[in-house]
Image (cartoon, rainbow, N blue to C red):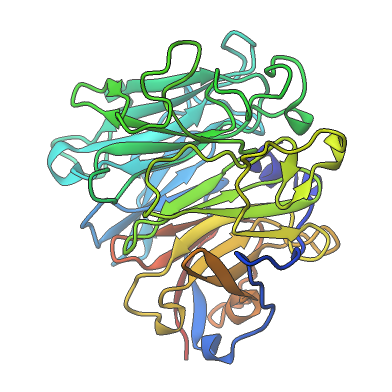
Length: 429
């Protein structure tokens, strides 16, 4: 089951507890009083399963909200209104079930001049398995209306057949690392199925461990002007003969639903949703740009041996997550976030802000917002700040399931929720 499906059926979510301490992981469960001067403000509501929020580079007047079942809408920040006509409407081609739909979007770094943006979406009931196809497609804004993009401008860049209706292609984004500009990163789930082990999954080790498909990975490609793509020459499998997929950058992931690049350091943060016991956060430091890491799924979940495969040792080259937590104490569906680089909320400066869709399996299935500090490979100061944000001071609005975090062009942070709300994190009183 993927994150979008978990969002639809919250009872299927499970897990999150703090794991053992490691040299590369220090978890301090505390509430930092210095973070009291923050709050959440509901800036818009009424969305239908909003799954992502972002803004074009340099555009301070708008944010864009992607709804799962095929529309992208604009919030005018000055007026606080949602524009009545969708920016993009592709409901006619995206899947309308529990797992498929629009699951990610990003704007071209040169959007101001070329008008291109990219959408990660999955269809339903087609493909070689009859379970849908995941696409990354390019669209272009109207030359006469900055608030509208014609679906007919679509150029399909890359695709993959899905063996199940969940764990599809999710977050997409362009790198900000020097020498890596123009390279698009695609977070790809393992194709669903319990434990990456079912019909249409690769044998004997599942999709995530196989380098012969694009599932359970992070992919890296370079977008060309005509909408085709090439393989960056420093991809770890560049030049490898078929059936190895040269698009692979890292592998051994279950469902990396949300990721981000730190806009200051270029470090990449990946929230990988787990199966039955643990959630994990992985950090790809900018100092190690070559990729090739294997995160160990399906034989390892977080830092522990997957009990479903108790007699199968994890891959010897498996990379430890930088943080993991258990379902019964903390949360059951990690939602990767952002290192705060805005200027307004000083109490969050330099902290990684992320969430969990539903909180612990023993709780009331409402979302959680966390912070943590990342320095030189070590995560510390892991803190639950939900109660500092919700209920909101203005309006008393509660947080439902967290579906995503997002940034505007200034680095200020937003939260989308299952209840159809968009919140902004701001300086409190």
